[in-house]
Length: 602
Image (cartoon, rainbow, N blue to C red; front, side):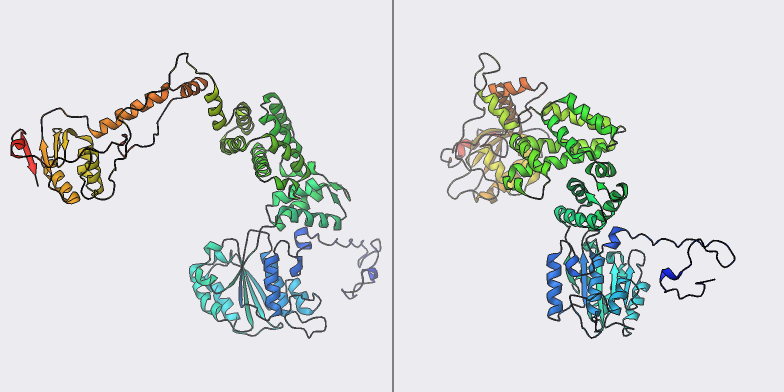
C-alpha cells in the first residue's frame, strides 16, 4: 500500500514500481506519458523579442512601456498565425508583471517567473479574460464584459480583455461596447484581434491603437524552422524548410503545423527531406518543376509528357503542378527584370542557378504569354473531369507556342521578309479626301468671324448642343445637296419629322449667333454621314488587307482577318479631316430663294 496517501506533488520516484501489486493485489497501471504539445504551442513566443517579422510593432510597444504611454485599447490585425493572440498575451503579461521580487511595475520585458506571469502563461489568470467573438457575437456577451469592468482586479494590477475575431461581433454588440471602450476605467485594457479589419466599424477603430502584423517572409520562416528542428533533435534539408515556409504563406502557426507533420514522417532523430515534404504537401519535386519548365519552353512535347507521367506516379496534384509553374514563371520574370535579385538569399540555390539561366534565355513577352496561358489553363484543370488530361493539354499548347516569337518580333520579321504575293504593291491611301487643319467642333461654339467650314462641322455643333435626336436624324437620314453657309440645302428621307429644318436652323442660330437658312430639296445629294463613314471604313480595311505585311500575316496565320483599321486624323464620324472651306457666302438674295422648292429660316 506504499504511496496510496502520498502527496500528489511528491517526486515520482516514491511511487511503487510497476510490477508491485496494488491495493487489491492487481498490477498497478503504468503512469500515462505526458501529453504531447504541438510545436505551435511549444514554441509560442513569450516575449516581444520572440515575435518574428514584427519589428515595427515591437519597437512601438517597447517605447510605449518605457515612456508609460500605453494605450487603453489595441487593435491587432493580420492574416492567421502571425501572432495576434500571442501579442495580446505578451501585452497582458507586460502590464501585470511584478518581477522576481514582486515589486516590479509594467515593463516591456516581463520576467516570466512571478505569479502573474506564470498564471497568464498557463491561461488561468482571473484578470486576463479571453473571448472568441466568433462564437459569442451578441450584445449580452459584451454586456458581461462591460459589467466586469466595474470591478477592480482580483489579483493583478490591470484587467485585460482579449477579444479574438472581434469583427464577428454584431452591430448592437459594437454599439454597446463603444462608451466603455472610449472611457474605460484606469484598471482596464482592451486588446482586439481580427483577420477582417474592414468589417470592424470605424467608430471602434478610432478608439484603438492599431497594429498591422505583417506576413512573415519565407526566408525568416525557414530560419525559424531550422532552429526548431535542431531543438527537437532532428535535421532538415534547406530545400525542405523552404518548401514548408513557402506553403505557410507568411503564417508562423501554419508553418509550424506543417513542420510538425514533416517531423512525424521522418525517422526518430532522422532527417526531414525535401522529397518527403513535397510528397506530404502534394507538390512535385522542385527539380522536376524546373525540368518541366525547361521542356515546355524548349517545345519538347515528348519529354514534357514523360515528366507529367512521372509526377502522376508520385501522386502530384496537377492543379498544384500548374501553380508551381506559375510561381516559377513569376520568379524567372523577377530575375529577368531585377538582375540584382540573382544574388538574393530570398531564393533557393536551384532558383538562383537554374532560374538565372532561364531568365537570361527567355524574353519578358514570352514569360508574360506563358503566365496568361497558365492562368487560363489552371481554371480549365480545376473544372475538367480529368485533371491530368486538362493539364497536359495546357502544357502541349505551351510547347507549341514556345518557339513562336512575340507579336512585336513577329511584325519585325514579316516586315523584313519579301512580299507574300509576287507583284504586290503598297496600299493606296485611304479614300475620302486628304488631311487638313480644319477644326472639328465637339463641345463648344465656333471661332468668331468664321462660320463652320463644312456640313460635318455644323452637325458636330448640333451634337455639342446636346440635341441627340436631331443629331441622329442629321447623321443617318439627311443627304447634303449644297453647303453655302449660312445656307444649307438638304434632302431629308421620308420618315424624318416635318419640323427638322426649323429645329436645325434654330439650333445653329443659337450656337453661332448667325441667321441660317435651311432649304429642303428633291436633288439626290451626297450619301449620309453615316454611309460615308461606313464606306470609308470599308475602303481602309480593303487597303490594309492589300498591304504586303498584312498579307504575310494572313498567310502565316490561316483564318486570321482584318477586323478594324485605326487611322490617325479621323473625325468622330470616321472620316478624314477636311481642308478649310472658302470664305462664307453672305447669304442668298431674293432671286436665290425662288430657285428652291421649299424654304425655312429663323
